[in-house]
Image 1 (cartoon, rainbow, N blue to C red):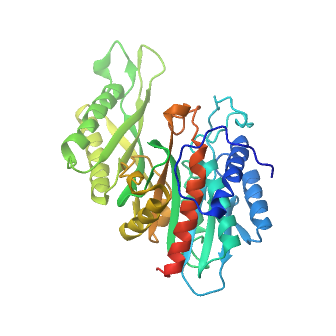
Image 2 (cartoon, rainbow, N blue to C red; image 1 turned 120 degrees about the vertical axis):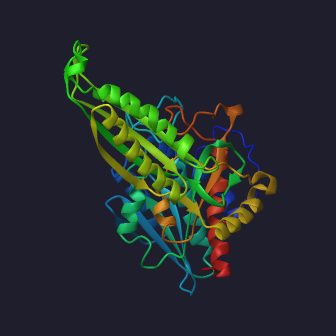
Image 3 (cartoon, one colour; image 1 turned 45 degrees about the vertical axis):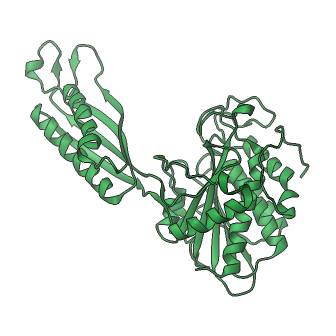
Length: 404
């Protein structure tokens, strides 16, 4: 594959092995190719073929799971544990507003979160690991579809990605725009929130707006429910424990002079702790029912638990931080804030010791400041080799120590 010089000057200071440094141009080229050809959740057909072709050239055997998921295996042929390195591969239904040469060629689709970078870094890490050889054990390469709201992680787990061979440790990283390029983080404990969704139908009695006393107005009840739900976090949840409750959609009515029979509310809850998650669900249901009843209405509630919190194994997180310090220096391994966003890497972390790390990718000097999911999202490509290095060193040091 022809290599193209990065459009950025190198300012990220990282200690790279010669093998990774030699791939600095290739990882950028891979990222740009994938960025140009985004595919959304469970439609990553060309992306999967591209990954398979690359791994085939390295003589790494692959198999498909859940349609577009690609799993490769590097086997040392020696005893030892198995580490799984995961990269998500789906794009978003976003129209890109960037004008650089490698902008999306698929209208209405864009790698606006960084998954193109994750695939590129893992492909180059696979090349280094295959060519240098493993000290023992196995490396499973998990290229996962459908992370963006489609629970591809859950689908991969159900399809057996953590088995045959059994995974002892799962590791992933995310290029992270809240954090400056050249910095890395691996938090102790929770790093991404549990994600729940709810729909509340407020059922009243419709009628003419001129005669409200002959109706039970679900719009009034819905407004009261929204206000009362906002007291759940402020008055029911321990203020030292994080929680977010957002009603993001309220729909009712068709005309200015008709009281509708129903109003529908939709929202989300984000938490880190199981007890808080359970409490908020209970209070949403009780507050909604009692508020509606007080105003002559009733409610039908659909509360859906989508993803659990992504919780890093503390010992493994310390292990990863130690390696990150070798790459970017101790002062650049920072204590990042946990995110209230969700991540289906939690599906792996619920079953095996796991670490989800952050690789800073923000660079205001280069105009790289737009957040994840923004139509002008971009990353400082100079961080890509350091991400490759992190994958490689985590795998090699874990396997060399024979940790389980």
